[in-house]
Image 1 (tube, rainbow, N blue to C red):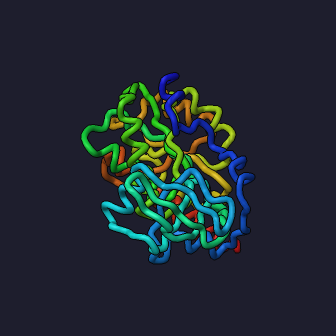
Image 2 (tube, rainbow, N blue to C red; image 1 turned 90 degrees about the vertical axis):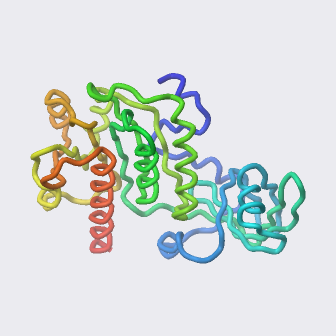
Image 3 (cartoon, rainbow, N blue to C red; image 1 turned 135 degrees about the horizontal axis):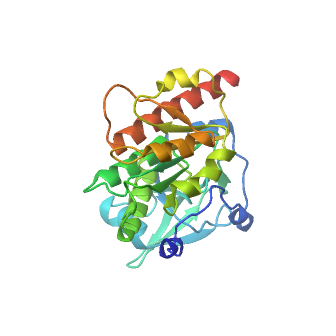
Length: 287
C-alpha cells in the first residue's frame, strides 16, 4: 500500500487543495456554469497548467497534443477548452503548432466551476475482477459523478494488483474527458474494512449493499440529503457476516438492490446511479 501512496496522481484524501487557484485570475462561476459543464460543441482537453489570464499562452504537448492534432486533426484557429480536473476551465484557440507541441491562446480569463452535487465516495471490493470489468466499473463511476473511488480490501477480496493502478488512472482521465465533467474522480489507495470504520462513523449518509436487506428506496424515505455520503460494495460472495456487523455497528445502512445476485460492478453502478438521482432530486426540491 505504501508503494501505491507514492505513485504520482494518487489522491489519498477526500478534500481537494485550492492552492492552485492563486496562480491565475479567477472568474466566479454560477449555478448555470455547473449545470452546463457537459454541454456545448467545443472540445475539451486536460492541462495541469493554465494561462494566468486572457491573452496569455500555454504549451500543450504529450498525449493531449497527439489527441488534438493526430486523432482529431485540429489546426491553428480551432477553438478548444482546457480543464485541470479541479473545476478550472479556460476557453481559447490553437495559436501555433509545431512538431513537439502546440500553443494555446486564452480568449477569456480562467474560471472555476464549483461542484454542487452530493459528493459520493465509493468503496468497492473490485480487486479480484478480471479482464475489463474493473475498467468498466471505474469508467462508469467517473461518468456518473462519483467524487472518489477506493478499492476495498476484504476477507474475500484481500488485494488489488499494483500494476493496474496506472491503467485505471488513464481510464478515469479518458472518462472525464468523454463525459465532460470538470472535477476529476479521485482514485484512492486501497483500504481495509477496519480502516473504513472511522470514516463511516463520521458520515451521516453511508449505504452498504447486501443481500436480503431493506430495499434501497424504502431505506431512503427516512434519509435527508447531505453534502457527502459513502457507498460500500462488497466482493463477489459479499462481505462476511463479521464485516457486515462491523460496518453497520458504526452507522452504515444496509440496502438491497433487488431480488437477483449482482456482480460487483453492477451493484456499484446501480447504487451510485440511484443515489446520484435521489440526491439531485432532493437538491432540486430544497432549492
